[in-house]
Image 1: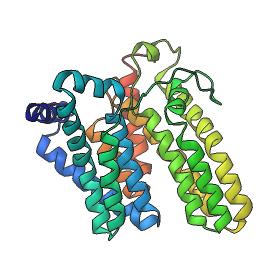
Image 2: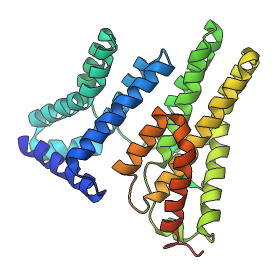
Image 3: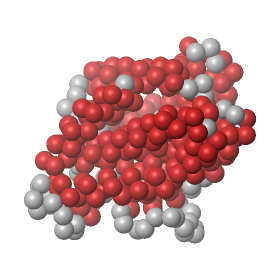
Amino acid sequence: MRDYFELQLVMTNRKIKEAGVNPALGYFLGLIAFVLLSEYIFHKTEFAKYLVILACLGFQLRLSEKSRTDFLLATFGDKSKMKIRVLENLIISFPFALILVYKSSFLEAIILLLCSITIALFSFHSNLNFTIPTPFSKNPFEFTTGFRKTFLIFPLTYALSVIAINVGNFNLGIFSMSLMFLITLSYYSKPEEEFYVWVHANTPKSFLMKKMMIATKNSTLLTIPISLGLLIFYPAEYNLILLFLFIGILFLWTMVLAKYSAFPSEINLPEGIIIAFALSFPPLILLIIPYFYTKSIKNLRLILND
């Protein structure tokens, strides 16, 4: 079991080195970005503690996919597999729990640790045996596949907005809209095969523009029920609602461009740190978008005709 965690550390260090960053520096920068982002979230919304719990559990659910837990079972046996899963979840939950304790959310920290242990005891199928219909076309694939993987979160997000309107809590409504954008950002975390970019008869500029416009259309389709509800019941706050919509779309563009700035590799530590700093200080996004755009054009010129 110890060898397993040593191997995970070696693999993580290797990924950080491949990004051109010293592992020690990478961990330090990641920690700083995590703290700054946490402070920003707690400063902006009273529901930050629930967002922290949700983010942590989201990471842990990925580790509980059945194919992965079956591999651990076949390799280490049932008893060791259970110990590994519990330790993995506790390691992941530790920084999130520390943030909650620092913010005096002691009950939420305890709930997070208990949920982390509970999730480790179960396995979840990442693929279902039926096809979930989506409001999107098959092309591009990001929203279609992403929607099917996260569709259970959408009723909860819409329910939050309804609760916000019923109890007169405008901040909760803004939180639900922001959560919707965070979900869609995750759709662009994984790159497709180079072939699925090469087949497009586009220049790099037109390819990126098409991706960004479709991302804007689809994200607007998902958020419009929330934003319309807020505009109807909080007409005096229309400027703030539209501002959050605009910022959400800017971050979505940033994520699209970050994906292709690292293409054909995955978004790695450098891009992740830049995005984290943008979340901590949104005005930075006006500098980050041109930076990612330039890098994306350079990468795509190797694949698409310019």
